[in-house]
Image 1 (spheres, helix red, strand yellow):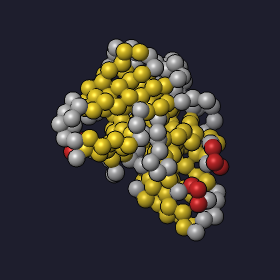
Image 2 (cartoon, each protein chain N blue to C red; image 1 turned 45 degrees about the vertical axis):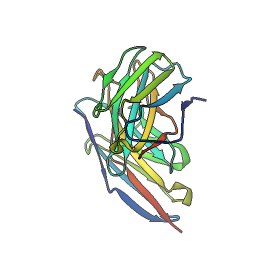
Image 3 (cartoon, chains in turn brown, green; image 1 turned 120 degrees about the vertical axis):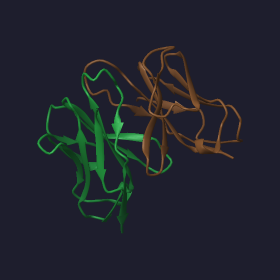
Length: 114
Length: 115
């Protein structure tokens, strides 16, 4: 059974802290994605990666960075957390090639920045 | 560019009634289309996907969706709502050959089921 796991379900951090969100997939997928989800705004893509050490900006990369040192692991970093980064963060992965290549999602991390 | 519009941010139905969640998309090339469901405080789970093999697609939990190219629609239906269907539903599109594996999501429709 396919699985995407995220390091924390709930996280509370203070303004200015450096925050790491970890995502691991066990499906040998090439693509990995980080989204944030806010009420009324749906899912917005922060960054994605199509290979180890490769990354591309999504729609809202400001204030975030990412790291992919191993194929199965994709980390989202908030260099200096701010209250407007309080949100639900979702990680996803997918394969490549011809076909639909649906994304598989982790359970999400609800981050609160105070 | 591709986009997804979900009509109605909130839909309420009575238990046992028909569920209809609307999704319209725009895509310059034949699309792949998806419906995902999200239960409270959980990630997204794939309900079903359209891959051009058949216009009527059956998914999990009794849901199905019909692809209508002329209407650029991919509406989600279920004949009889159950309390456990209360969740948020997202429609998404990906265009083959667009050089990207990104999905474009609609803003979601929250389904309430009234006993």
